[in-house]
Length: 390
Image: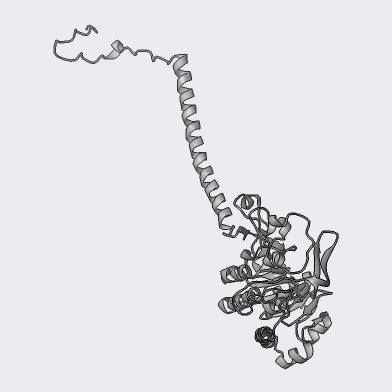
């Protein structure tokens, strides 16, 4: 028997080999260049895919990061980001702290003063933006000599809206001074406490001042000397249309008609002020008018007169506020808006929401309040007034 395999028949494929006639061709290994190229191409492709994936993820994080920064900056260039003021940041209970510091103005369009202040409309907006689940209550930290009726009333009205909308309480801590608009804006609070050595009161309305310089001969306005010489000679005249348009001109006397008109305006605002405090602090209007007047009171006298509910330092106040809000003080955090972060500053933020920067920090493109630039009294200011008054 022969193992010889006959040649293939023309037109047909060769017969399969069998037995010992099967020959396996040796596997040909790729050359060094091909092996290196294949490994390099695979590694490069892998790195490229990884880089693209990381770029997409990084881009998403960048978008989220920038979006978070944009969302915490208002159109008026104020930061709304929060930072812990008291307690553990991971606490279950939350109280929102809002500061009312310095003169109370209406909004950012008024510019700035020589000192920091508060924009009443922005404080009101903060309160209106708070949802029931955002915080378990609000604490107002107050140190103000008062300010505009408009700004003070805006804060007061927003406080009442917050209480009605959420069912949460509002607590006040006077940290040195709460006069005039400070009393008006915080009157609806559920409880008002003052730190040691504070002054509270000045329930009244004032408008002016209106100077009258008799027989003026000279005025001066240097850094060394600032005043008016009134030994006779120089006068000033305003040209105006409309009765009383130049009211407040220090070079003429106030007319009886003007005095009567503005006195009636002050009486209306004073009556509103007295009624507001009387209703919210459970006092008689006659007591405020006839006994308290527009005087300032120390802690003890302010409590005896019903203007505050007690004296507490800040630690005691936060602990008491947490308890009265139905929270565990050891598991409560007090949060406040913080100054702008680096990202927020790049996005145009210059201050925390509600706060008004002093003139020295306004920078280019901002103007000082007309209360500073338009006053009739001589001022001492180091610098170029045109830079801040326009």
